[in-house]
Image (cartoon, rainbow, N blue to C red; front, top):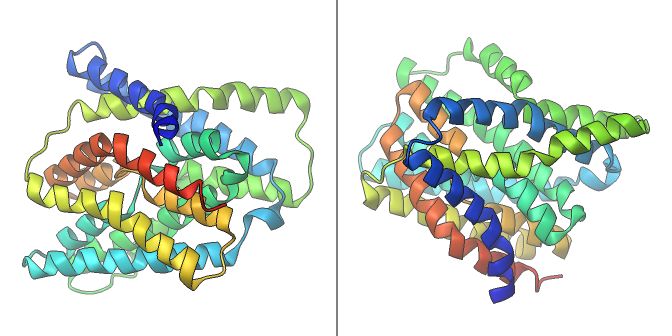
Length: 310
């Protein structure tokens, strides 16, 4: 277990470096926003496209993986919303809390870290997890907020959701990369080198940006944020372990990758949604901060356990 902790520690040290730079004002909020934009639109997109384009499509698209992740995550999403309703909060807040409970930092943290720790075969399952998070639950939160504000399902938001998905570079990188792979097109050597160099900036850039963005976060309402962090770091990998190992016929290695992906801390894009819609941004901010700090230990424990499954 100590070996796993030491392997994950460098990732969190880069996050800590970014946090320190942001905290002392060396790296401003504006600089963090521009770094995040570079990573999101260029470096991470290049990494994802290169990974997807070099994967055989048949090895990536596994519907048992999709069903296992979707059912387990959907169950926890519903549980988090039910707890929110029991506290007498509205639909929009309950849905935002549910996002915190299930949406982890798979793109910025999970993809580079899990590929390094668990091997390149982890790319396929991680991409499917990322696609379900972005497409299914990214759309669900917008629908819930629309219903909460309009009192009914407003069909006018569907084109907005579709355009938002098409504009998401991570989704488009996955789709275009898999399409390239499905057409059995070779990647020319200069293009492959270009993608490799640009994608190489994704890991340190993303981790530093995570840390710098945390510098502006505060742990307000820590009780609720603590509950949501427990859902994300403990319950989420737990329910995914049940669905992948006991309910659906998921291959052990893929199950291990999915459980590890589910153990990641709350994603920063949940805060962007919360701030954009004006729904519980301080609660989400605290959840991101608490879960990321706690993940230094919990992620190592989960990865140490799942490596024994295959």
